[in-house]
Each structure stands twice: as structure tokens, then as C-alpha cells.
Length: 120
Length: 108
Image (cartoon, rainbow over all chains, first blue to last red; front, side, top):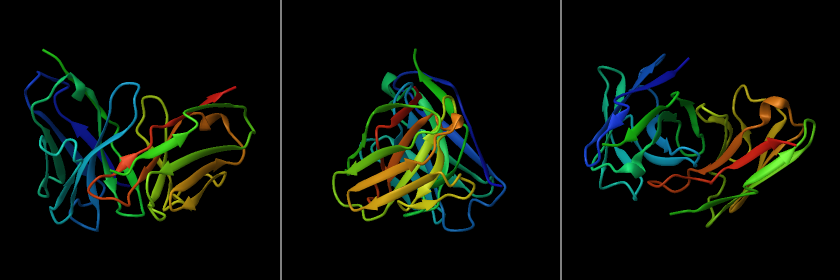
């Protein structure tokens, strides 16, 4: 059974960089044809897709966040990571990592989510 | 970006009711439409993929239909554990995957 777990600071200061890691267990991050995605959800609001990285290392980003987002993968640790630069209070949200089985298959495994608050 | 619009935004229903939630895409997305259920404080759960395929382990009272721009999620007989928020998501247009705004299903 694949499991995902987010980790990282719960509090980030404005203008700094938010950094989160998703650790995958129960399967190799480099096997199969999967995208490894980040999604966020501000309190009381809907889901916003941030971006994803493919097994090959290629990335796709939400155009509205693209200038500030970097997603990378560390296959040796079975982890992938999110960096979001120049954060503001609007970036305060629960951040989820998920496995996306690709076009037509959906995001079938999710982490439990981690709350990141942007505040001085 | 492809915009996804769900209706209604909220819905009150009773146990045993048949419920339908609609999702409309701003342009054709073929059948690249997924549905998720989210309960408070929990991660979303994939229910339906490719518009009408039931994810493994999901009860058969959930079904999906549609193609092009109009899609529906139907719960044939509401159970107490079904009261949650439901989201549609299109995976047709990359790099920009988009979700609907959500439909909150409440107990009447």
C-alpha cells in the first residue's frame, strides 16, 4: 500500500521560501508511470493544484504560481519536494502531496496534509 | 485555463436520497474528469476517474457520467458517511490541472 507523508516547517515568514518534502513509502517513486503532485487548500476554500513532477524528472506547474514554484525529486530517499518562493499570507494553506496516475486516472494516493502559515 | 463550475455549491439531503452533482467545463475535456470526496480535516479521496470509472474500493452507489463539457456525479442512496464536500477535477489540460469549487453535501 502506497503512503505519502508531508513534512516541513509549519510557519514561514513573509518573503521567505516555503519548503516541503513528501516521503513515499510502500513503493518506489521512480517505478511506474506516475506524476508526483502538490495541491494546496486555504482554510475553508477549495483545492488548488500547484504542480507535479514525472518519474522522468519533467515538471508541470500551475501558470499562476510558475514563477515561484520548484518541484524536485530525490529518488535515493524516495522523496519529492516543493519550494515556493516570496510567500505572502495568501500562501497560507494546507499543503497536500499526491500520486497522480496520469491523464484519465486521477490522484489516487494522498498525504494527510500539512498546514503552513505565512506570518511574521 | 479550463474553468470547472460545479452546481449546486451546497446541497441538503436525507439518508436514502438520490443525489446528483453537476460539473461543467469551460471547454471540451473529453472524458478526462475525476471526482473526489473530502471530509473535514482529511485529504480528498478519489471516487471516480475518467468520468465514469469507479475507483477500487469505492461503493457502487457512487456513479459518474458525461463527456465533453457536462458531467454528473450521482449517489444512488445516501449513507451517513457520504456527507462531505465533493470536487470535480479535469486532467485534460496540462500543464494546468483545475478543480471545481466544490459542492458541500449536508444532512437535511
